[in-house]
Amino acid sequence: MLNGIASEMTKLRTGHTFLAFMIAGTVFVVVASWGILTSAHEAAAGTALDAVWATTEVIRGWFALSLVIAMFGAYFVARDFAQGTAARSIVMGGGRRAYVISKLASGAVIGAIGAGIGAALSLPSAWLLLLTESLSPSVDHTGWMVLLGCAVVNFAAGIWGVCLGLLVRNTIASLVTVFGLCLVVEPGVQAIAPAAGRLLMTNAMGSLYLDPRSGLLEVPQASIAVLGWLLVLGIGGYLVTLKKDLT
Amino acid sequence: MVKILEFDNFSKTFNGREVVKNLSFSVQQGRIVGLLGKNGAGKSTSLRGALGLIRPTSGHARILGGSFAELGIQARRVGVSIEGVGHTPDATVARDLRVCTQLLGLPASRRDEVLDLTGLDHARNLPVKKLSTGMRQRHSLAVAMLANPDVLILDEPTNGLDPEGIHWLRTFLRMRANEGSTVLLSSHMLAEVEQTVDDVVILQQTLRYSGSLHDLTAGGRRRLEECFFELVPPTDSSLPEAAKNA
Image 1 (cartoon, each protein chain N blue to C red):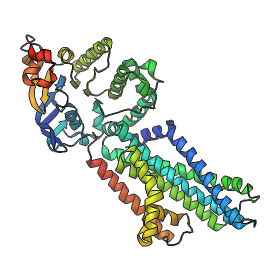
Image 2 (cartoon, helix red, strand yellow; image 1 turned 120 degrees about the horizontal axis):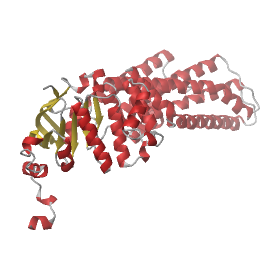
Image 3 (cartoon, rainbow over the protein chains, first blue to last red; image 1 turned 90 degrees about the horizontal axis):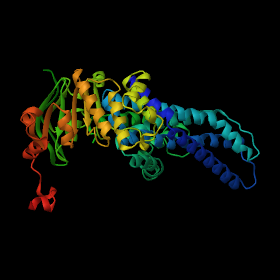
Image 4 (spheres, rainbow over the protein chains, first blue to last red; image 1 turned 45 degrees about the vertical axis):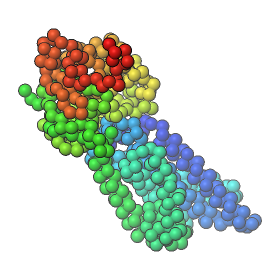
């Protein structure tokens, strides 16, 4: 099993795709945060923005990296099925259970690296973007909690993406699934049926980075919801891998 | 003789279509066995079944005394080169083999040994997707040989190999068998198989023959192709008009 994890780490380390995803994600987050500050600046109609609020918003923007992390996690698994390297890992690495465990461990590593990148770049990006408003970043207790929440969400996104990849097993379909869940399905359910929608993965993640949207779960309940989803999807991915033929 | 691989009433149905039906045969240690059949005869399905990549609808496939899934670390005793057990196309040959040595818990030096063994050392820095068909075949064999396995399962191993490569493979497989290894290979190339194998399994959804090549060809007095078509008659549509009229 440790051999399987080591080989997955080599794939992650020596391939260029993860780096490309992370660079794209970083650009995406910075541009989105810049957009938020620009809109806020226009809405303020000449009044200076509050530095603490602006800093917190830029830090919170790093939650969006979770979309890219989850997409990479799903791609990292689904690509294996498309290339036949899933079958190779299963044949050479001691079976399907070892394969699933090594992939879930990879998801945790992908998430941890993404969380680290997000946390490390939060304050420099806030400093850079607040320069455009002639402000200096200022982090209060809420700002630090948002930073921590974003890190947790980005970490969970790695495992979540891998679970979805194990379930969907098709490269394009798995990317569309992550994208659709994050941007269409879960926000849609939240808008139509908030009581049910707040239990969904990305909405529960919103609670963790203290999303100001109303109707979300409290942090402890949201943490349980996120863990529950990872558990259910992880077991689902394991059972699908165990039972489905590799043709 | 020790049974290395055994199919026991193995059947597999895909979407209501029975691809393999009640297949029973065994492969003895130290033998080179050719699994022969037309396209769609169920050869690849049988090989996948032996490796646990597909689950039988009924019956069993056992390898080294148990199902492949139960082998655990013993799985490294089986080297595999079959369609669908793929490689990372964007990775270089060396990197792809490094991933495999790690998967098997082998030292990195083993990669260099199999690159040398399969004549791929000059291509170690080429991406797998840029390899020619023959070089890709050698790459697959290199992966299969990494753990110096006791059993080799090879799907169409001569596809894309040049005459020198085919000669090398034949010599190599014979050497492995003489050392006690067991080889199960599927092929369409009957003339090639005739020069390589000890035993033959002929499959056309159901088992048509399982036994020694010597017995099938009456000690070499008949060609394998002739025997094959007696057991698996060619369909009319596969023959050109001129041949039908002849």
